[in-house]
Amino acid sequence: MDASLLTIQPNAPEPIYRQIVEQLRRLIAGGQLSPGELLPSVREVAGFHAINPMTVSRAYGIAEGEGLLERLRGKGMAVAATQRAAHTQAQRLALLEPQLLALARHARELELPPEPVLRRLSKLLGE
Amino acid sequence: MNAMPQDITPTAAAPLAARGLTHCYEGGNVLCGVDLALEPGSVLGLIGRNGAGKSTLIRAMLGLLQPLSGEARVFGEPALRLSDDAKARLAYVPQQPEALAWLTAQQMLDYVGRFYPRWDAAFAHKTLERWKIQPNKLLAKLSPGERQRVDLIRALASQPELLVLDEPAAALDPVARRELLREVALRAGESGTTVLFSTHIVSDLERVASEIAFLHEGRLLLHCGVDETKERYARLWLPAKTSAAAPAQALGRRRHEDGSLSLVVERDARGQWPEAARLPGARIDALGLEDLFVEIAE
Image 1 (tube, each protein chain N blue to C red):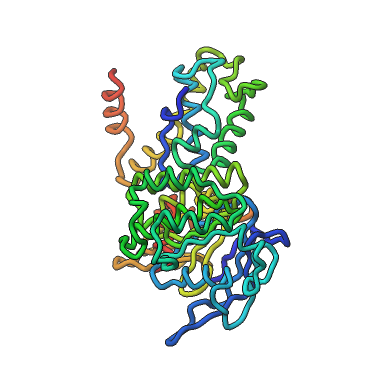
Image 2 (image 1 turned 45 degrees about the vertical axis):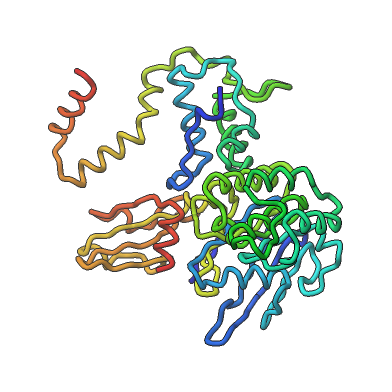
């Protein structure tokens, strides 16, 4: 994996370490990163994005704690080998939870009943 | 203001620390009892509006001006009486460097390099080229931006333990600015360099700073970790009919024309937003640092 695969938005309300963890979750769940694949070093990510190395370490540490990554001696961080190839549907759906919550909130603020929103969403999902 | 998160407790080992700094120029107070300490290896971003007292605070912390009251220490030594040893471990880049204007950039770097035990001449040479400074031009003939770039090179090449930059971003184009941020971030992370920098470009600060301090009208409104600040504060919007139930304690408070109310609120010890966030029609919005600053400094 290359450090440029991560997108960092420093001025977003979400802290940078969380942006990194979130992207790792997605890349691994989506199969763009496969088990055993090496991650760029903390220095490479920090240098490429001009961000504090502590922030990258913190993100890697959290991802390691969640079992997404594992530390390979002498090689650095890699995608955990025990990662199941395909996540269950429930796990993948959980990744969408923040967007679904935001959508539900916006719909309520606009005083839209559920039906038209769901109809539109179904259409977008290609049903 | 009352909310002063006590996350960051000063210790004796702080490379840079100030207690109760007060200063005034004609026409009013610039600093009103500022306490601030930096832990080794931390990168503190100081933000504030023009005239908030950022440069004065930096100069007082380094002993370059004598405050009306209060005390500053650098590596544990009184800032107003620094030893040569402490000075060699410190680099400061003012907003408008003026020293040694009769030398060329190259002569100045060669000259000051001799005073620093860890001078990196190769870095100085390489960066002069990359930042497009003519090495044989007199400093006096360079533009203010070029002067500050030369001074940034001087500061970085000395490989200081404590690096203090006053508005470094102003002199640099976006590419050079990114390079500077990269240097700052990697040195802090890998060599344990402690960094204090002031800026009005908040996204620069969000990239590299580990802590942020808001200076407003001579007071520190907030001093907190960057990530913690983003997670702990948010804007609470209340419609006119429920705005009477707004919490009394808030960092910022704005009444809108339609009677609705915006407040900057803080999570409690259990991570919960204030009661009022659950009122009908209430809305909690996460804030970037720039929005947070605008909300509380207005």
